[in-house]
Image (cartoon, rainbow, N blue to C red; front, top):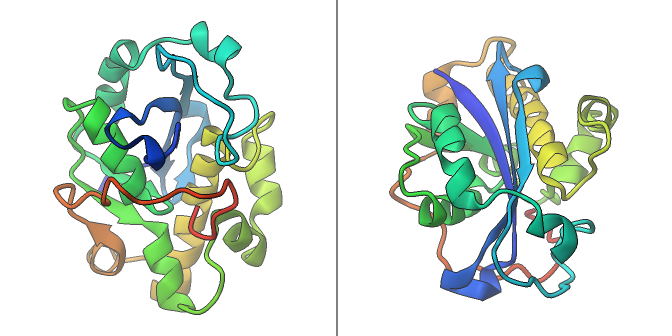
Length: 208
């Protein structure tokens, strides 16, 4: 089972069908560890002005975005890295909904959601990615593997999701997680993306 972690930063679900991808990162997961040497991360030119909003990460502003490649330019590289593999992410169906809308040639086998895994361990606890990484002692490792990035930016969140997958899967299934059990606990078919009207009211949303 080939796994690749993903995170997108977008203009917000409030844009509905006009939501734009502003940044994307992919990190292969090999032997249950993020392969940062094989990572891919890029800003994306939305080809329109993006207003400042509280849920848009600092740094994702018009000037650097205007010099970034468009989503049509990066789509072939994304397809090469994703097609035929499982996408791993925190609340990954939200990322997949936007990616599928903007890049229809991308065809992962399925999705694996670390948020679903976390809820199986403690459904009443706070489940934000940064909170979970702190809880499992993974924050310093995420900082080391994604230097120059930070929480709520695509590379840091992607590395964090990859680290969290391993920690949660081993907590639930032991040192050698079983692929079938993992898919049963956290798998999502690619034909069931999140609803397009999902609100994204804050950069620090508890499920982000």
